[in-house]
Amino acid sequence: EHRKSATYYALTALGIPAFCIETSHDLPNLEAKVYQHNLVVNAFLNLFGVEFEQPGLTLGTPILSYLIVSVNKKLPLAIPNGQTLLVAPGADVEIVDVRANYERGIVIAVHGLDAFNPLRTPFTFNQKTTVTVRKDMFFMGHITIAPLPQGESFPRIVGDSRIVPLYEPISVSLPSGVPPKTLMAGASPTPESGRQTAKMPDSPPKAASNAVHAPAAITGFLLEVDGHVVEVKPKTTLSIAAGSMIKLIDFVTDGVSLPESVVMNLVGFVPKDIQRNTGDDRGFVVNTAKDLQTAYSVKGKSGVYAVQAEQGREVLTSCFLQFVQPKLASVTLRFKGNTKTVGAGKRIDIPAGATVEILEVSLAEGVTASNLRLTLGGHAVARALPQACIMRDIALNLAVFNGDVLAGKVTWAP
Image (tube, rainbow, N blue to C red; front, side, top):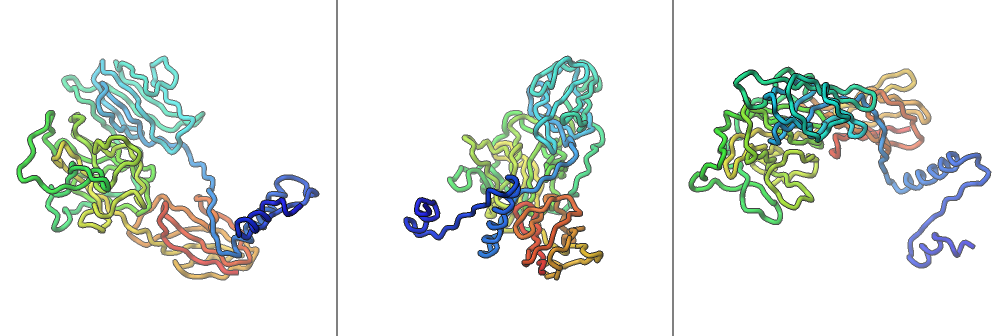
């Protein structure tokens, strides 16, 4: 009978050592049988030093980040939660998309409009209204749409945002030795880079149609970092922990509506799986651990990348993103009534079978990260702290990551 098994075939026909796990039919239920299988599989993995990850489950409070709104079919605007969009009466308004910490079950309502969930459904604006966003029965946030003052025609955003950015821009000069207009996009594409940096032309290019007299018109760059909206002022640098997920949203202007020829280019990033690269990187999610080409960073291998407002071959203005390696400082634990703080790379002895609470994870000063995740012995640990785990009878590494970037680890030993 065993000569007909897959393990026998693997060994004799393919030369691959194999094993089979069987559980007794006398076990009371499927859960008990699967549990016994897991014990054997984990024992083999530990024997060969293999660590694997499994996803945790964290359900956060539904929160609206911003709404993407188009007025008269122009380039969409990003309206953060709690802010007001001023629009000329009679304009056609369309809620293009919703940005929140959930993707499913989201419903919008435009007060005074007799339509269910009018997402991507244009309507004519005549009087002040509120757009509310819900996740199932939970209120997520809102924006207000109000008339522009008489005599004005360009849509603009007013009001204080209710979103508190996790990152504060640091005002700095342009990197030493890099003239302002050498970080340009629009070079002839190459198979490797697609669209990246080019040398300054010998003579300035001719002005494009609908030319923007920038940088005066552009007052900021609106980005999303790990789900949090932040504005970066021109010629400033935003420090971000490597491994974070970012998205370019839109420009912040002084009330001027920019022509479609103005694009936002993250130099060093080329979107994947697109038929035509327009040079506009807005809307693409960028994994900062692996989606950026180091050769196109400022000075190369510096960890600093330019985000540029471009029109044709002209760079109107720019800001900079500096990606900093996250470094674990310490982990604070509690077990058997004692609280211990363990430094990065250190080992702590914990009795087998003890319940261990992970109380706090601290990074080195100067680095802020909001995409942290933990693994213990290769198994994912839920992100919400404190978190209780059971110490096993083998040594385990508690590893701390920001996204896909390892910040450090501590070792638990029985």
